[in-house]
Image (cartoon, rainbow, N blue to C red; front, side):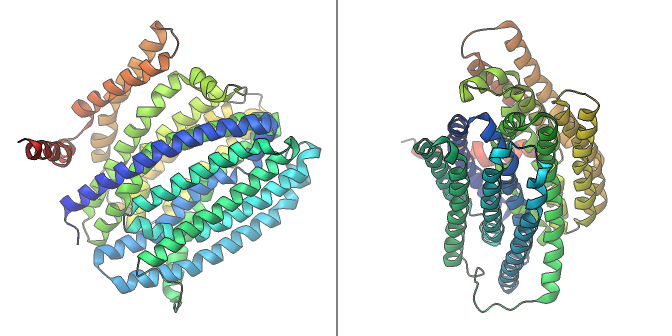
Amino acid sequence: MKQPQAASTRVVINTGILYAKMLITMGISLYSTRLVLNALGASDYGIFNLIAGVIAMLSFLNVAMTVSTQRYLSFHQGTGDCAMQKKIFTNSWVLHIAIGVVVVVALLVLAPVLFGGFLNIPADRIPTAQTIYYFMSVSVFFTIISVPFTASLNAHENMLWIAIVNIIESIVKLAIALSLVWFIQAERLVMYGLFMAVLSAISFLLYAVYSLKKYDECSVRNYQIDKPFLKEIGSFAGWNLFGTLCGAGKIQGLAIVLNLFFGTVINAAFGIANQVSAQVIFFSQTMLRAINPQIMISEGRNDRQRMLRLSLMASKFGFFLLAFVAIPIIFEMPVILQLWLKNVPEHTVVFCSLVLVAMLVNQLTIGSFSALQATGKIKAYQSITGSVLLLTVPLAYILLKLGFPAYYAVVSLITMEIIATAFKLYFWKHKAGLSIRNYFERVIFKAAIPLITVVAVCWLITQYLNFEFRFLLTGFISVLFFALSIYFTGLCKDEKQLIHDMVVKKVLKKLHKSTP
């Protein structure tokens, strides 16, 4: 078994790998979005984000469903039961094939309803939209059946191969975006959907082939179905899927509500807002992916206190890492979007800013999800918090029906995120034993001063300075002040000691060795 220090070192190494990957893929992805928007035009890009918005859902779907299998694999790594790990993988493989088939069939059954007049799409583009929808159904299937393999990689904390595959995906997406100009305008949207579906199949093969060769428990031959265990993991995955679909449903539901009131062009603005949030959230998700296996392993070793401490760190550092990027971007949003897209659809600035605020609220309790996953007690958590977040859609519909501006749809998202936070804390306390007082002391109170500092710095710069490329100064100064504020006021004593032991001592040791 890994010793705590070795495990902490592994977390740092994996975090570094994932951040390097993130910087590469984020840059490529943002540029690809600009190329696709210009190639398709605002209306077709809006159609893609409305119909193929399931693509944005896929990353969340994949992460949440991966946690189901990863939870059991990591948990039994903690217990040291190798035979159990193999049984988990083989049964998970069967389960996810079944889930993939059911989800695809459900999507196909829904197609006549969606395209029979429910969605507000120009009549001449409905056949194209339907084709895109079928391509995305293929993408969903390959994403779901890749889950056991990505879960195994995560359980083994092999972030390097995950990073390699993600970089390959980003490069292929850039190639797809560049290739769109080779087709006539009417064909571009269909070809884009086709290429994205093919990419999902390629990603599945990269994960599957590597895992089957690398890990003993990854085998699709000679497996035996364990019905009791299949029922257990099926229930766990099912509730995870419910929670994930609620989270994705609130976004896709908002897209549909906006479409019903304002048409496809506003879906381009909302789609760009989700692109921005998806890229920015990588900063915190990357850390969570690195620390998540250790949360599960700690629970497997019956070390509940370490598990809770890590989950609190995940919430605080997840918030910090998102705020590092999100706060300066919010203050400099108009300039950044103009430089990025050139042609910025109406409402994009306010949509992007409000979506980032909603994500910041979400991060304050992101560790609750990992903690409840580790304990296995997720039924009530997923059903209640998922349902609360899904209420975003009817609330947005009511507000727009009453005549409020379009951005109130995203205001409803922020409102329901705040309400969901209270429920998350309740379950974190009653299902995992969290001290609410400890949460406020280690997360909320510690995050308050750094947050006030970075907001004040960004506000002062944007109020009193005005020159070209000011956003670079805003980003640099805000990050500097935010980092200093976090170190002096945002960290607990044990967290400072951990940083000192893992970073400072190692740097000094290497410097000492390199000195003649």
